[in-house]
Length: 155
Image 1 (tube, rainbow, N blue to C red):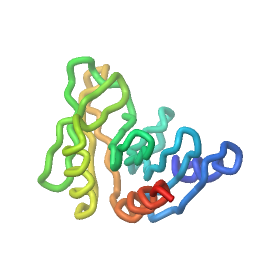
Image 2 (image 1 turned 135 degrees about the vertical axis):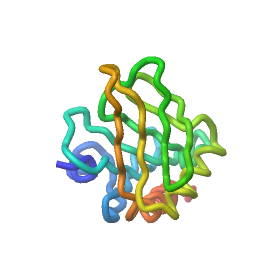
Image 3 (image 1 turned 180 degrees about the horizontal axis):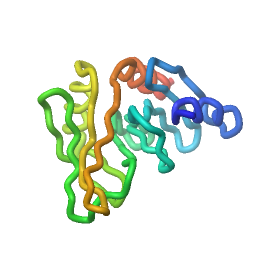
């Protein structure tokens, strides 16, 4: 079951509201803390770690279009994490299995690149020394990101 489908099914039980499903991306709203996000899982085989890429809006914190990725495998402690969309490359800040953009300007640039891209990849080196490459289709991403932002617009 995809992360998007699992979140949609879980929404009825957790207070999470599904805003919409757009191709490979979904948009959701959480009431507490208030946040809205677009989310997708990578293409290819299913992984037990439930990797995902998300772009969130946190109105209470004044944050918009904040990227977060959960890798399909833990990364090597010294390996950098790179997000690629077309010819654009972005270095991300990383924890053992997650990564974020380093600042709001990079978040904005990544979302702009996502709007014009067909796919995006997240690459690093795994703890076992093998490459980790998670590829995401971007069809529906822009609509899901916009729906999430509207879903958390101040009323």
